[in-house]
Amino acid sequence: MTVQAFLQVMLGAMALVAAASPLSVERLESGLRVAASLPRPTYEAGQVVEISLTATNNGGAPVSVTFTSGQRFDLVIRRPRGDAVWRWSHDKAFIQVIQAVTLQPGESLSFKIPWDQTDYQGLRVDPGPYQAVAVFLGATGGTREIRLPPLAFTIGH
Image 1 (cartoon, helix red, strand yellow):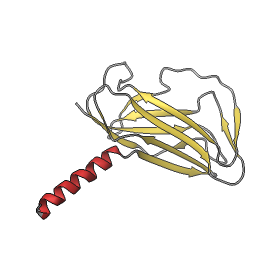
Image 2 (cartoon, one colour; image 1 turned 120 degrees about the vertical axis):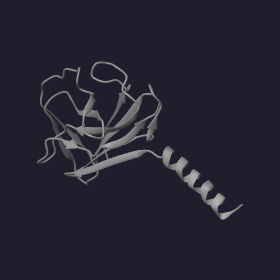
Image 3 (tube, helix red, strand yellow; image 1 turned 180 degrees about the vertical axis):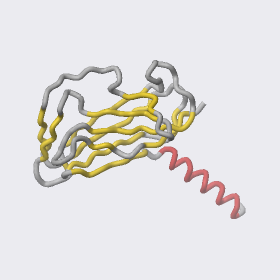
Image 4 (tube, rainbow, N blue to C red; image 1 turned 135 degrees about the horizontal axis):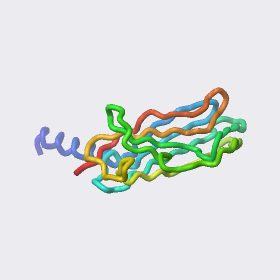
């Protein structure tokens, strides 16, 4: 095997590993680690895209999280230029109640948010690059919400 052929095989294997690796982003606020992840960077047209969102108390003391409604999170799917094509909460109503949740050290709140690749009108979106922006709506300390950096993914043909 030539060096060039070996390098091509290795690059192909690395690409397969990268394609199978989950994508994730996180932020740490007031002892709370908020993370979002996607299981893969590419989806087939029509395949459900499921984002996982987890808020974990990473500290050694209890953390109080205050929600101003029954909504705990939101998710926005947008094109890379910033145009939102879908928002999880768009067609939902939430109870208006203030609720405090105390997370003990190591305790988590976890959510799975499926997106069926449709827009606000229920029409299938075009193939191409997209971003998922997860927002945890629990207030801790001085923050009202924790918005995570976008997770980039692609919808194929």
